[in-house]
Length: 68
Image (cartoon, rainbow, N blue to C red; front, side, top):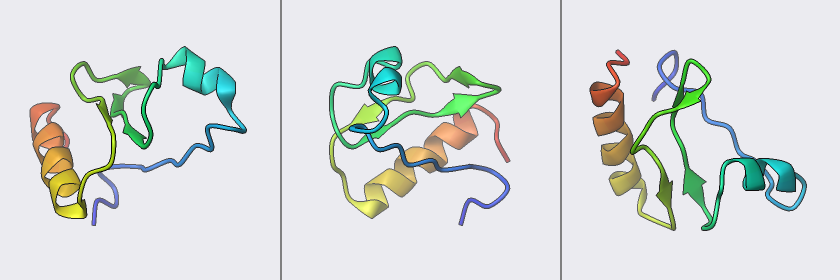
């Protein structure tokens, strides 16, 4: 659905504690949007949500950071 606009990466928190610490992840699951290797301010979401809510959230973020 987001091919060419968004790359989704799943990280195993038990196998990658250094990333969890580096990005200060406190809740699971977590969603963090990066653009050009930098975290997009205000893009972080932690905790479970429905697929529809996640899609709306991502769509709004992509518009706000001008990803077409």
